[in-house]
Length: 250
Image 1: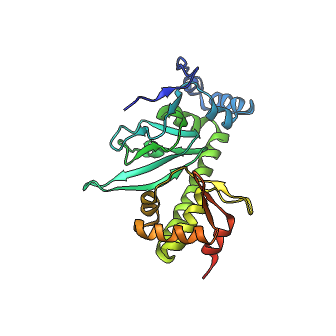
Image 2: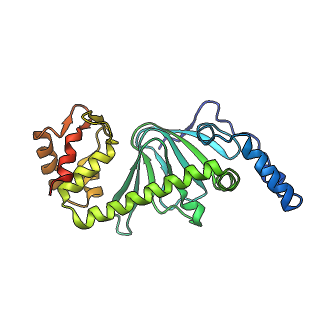
Image 3: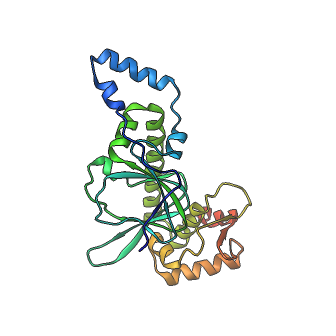
């Protein structure tokens, strides 16, 4: 298996000691220095787009493993561009896809909550640019920069809401509706009447794993959606907003 390539210019910068500066002296000076640092205008987007102390830019080719189940959980990852999938393998060897990520997604954050080993694997579905943030650097940034912690917490809350919706979807909706909702989510549905490209060559097995049904059922519903004009195959899968009718229809 080929090794990930570091992006050009991603040579690790020598460690600085921002925490040492804020931890010396009494609480008063520490608080004033922290306020001064925040007042300079911390930019979360710039933080997530550049290398620095504890941050390394990496490139993963399609189908390359970003991290594997059982690896040490010592960093958080931020997907800058591309698409990746999260999978987990049971003790009996059965693999399930539990999520598909797009640019702007955090993953591997279990390390911040005391997770010693990775509970699942992350694999590039397309060429991916990823920022690897060491656990210590991530914790320091979250404690020091309120603007960054706001961005991170907002992402976690949005994902938690989506997980709750997934659970309701699984409990109460048919497999056809679950598949339609998944396709709309993968297409980043939002622009009325405009088809948007989904992950190229996403397999029906992967869709079946995420929907919680069989491949044959997925194939049946995909053919139905195509005949009704809800989706289109043209080298990659495209989803039309009219697919929303399947989700809304009782």
